Amino acid sequence: MPVEMSRERFEDLVGEALDEVPAELLKVMDNVVIVVEDDPPDGEDLLGLYEGTALTDRGWDYAGVLPDRITIYRNPTLRVCDTETDVIDEVAITVVHEIAHHFGIDDHRLHELGWG
Image 1: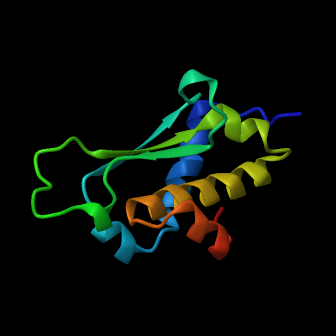
Image 2: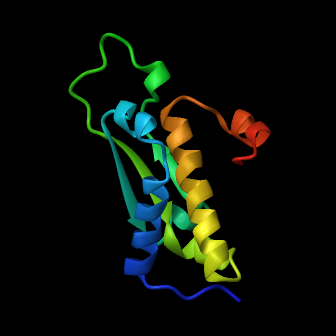
């Protein structure tokens, strides 16, 4: 049975997960916004999504673009969790996973590192 949780509480958990990211990493994140949505587009079953140009792919001509976007999806996360503790853990993993994409780390490497 999925966990029931208000959007406000879920957003707080995303904020808490961000608070756990080392300040040194947060300082070098550039032109990126992190948002919470209830569901991914087109019924996809994603917990999070990074959309943008990774820092490692930005060249001298990277300018004047909209911010990259990290989206954490509430309903799919709640569906895969059995307890609030599971949600806390899954949100933290998803936040780190999507931030890693901002730094140019791909899914294969994230799985190797245990953040898949």
